[in-house]
Image 1 (tube, helix red, strand yellow):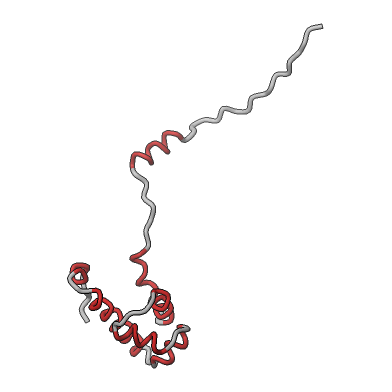
Image 2 (cartoon, rainbow, N blue to C red):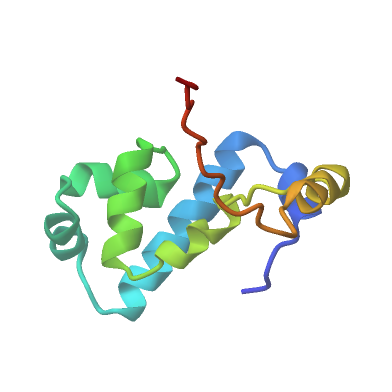
Amino acid sequence: MMKKTNNDYRNLSDRAILKEIGFFIKNIRLEMNKTQEQLAKEAGISRFTLGNLESGKGSNLISLIQVLRMLDKLELLENFRTERKISPIVLAEMEMSQRVRASGTKKNKKNRSDW
């Protein structure tokens, strides 16, 4: 199976993408030599739900995540991870505001009254 590029997926309908996901799940399940019943039980979903996923009828995200977990394919979700990026200007401002020297502690002078 050839890997599809992002542009290939843009040209597919939502239903076609669901069928691609279902085809992927089914192929991995068969490579692992598991029946729908076995995988569904391990994932904590019904065989009907797994059948819907595999046939491209869809399901909910929780079911998809549970199936991917049992297929040991959660790394596919890595593309959803985002990192906070700091702009160069903010980074420069943070570096400029860092202290270079310590001022030491200041001792409080006690007020002395002359008699």
